[in-house]
Amino acid sequence: MLKNYFKIAIAVLKRRKFFTFISLFGISFTLTILIVLTAFVDNLTSANYPETNRDRSLYITMVQQKNTKQFGQMNGPCKLLLPQPLRKYFKDTC
Image (cartoon, rainbow, N blue to C red; front, side, top):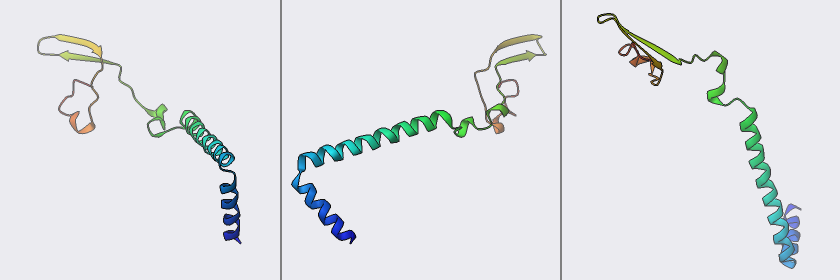
């Protein structure tokens, strides 16, 4: 029965080629636009990997470095984010 449906559909497609092209192009273009819009809305509204639990994140915006031997001090914005294993070597930086 399904085989007969395909035979009839192919016969109709062969008979009206121009209208078939317009119809298939319109359907495929509409589905493409819907998929792109759905992906865009999903990206805007959902919490992706970096944004999950963002309220628990800690941001370092200012760093103060002190040199106790020479009584010096330096303040400035934080530019360097180090992974946890490297922080023991660079205690005075971010």
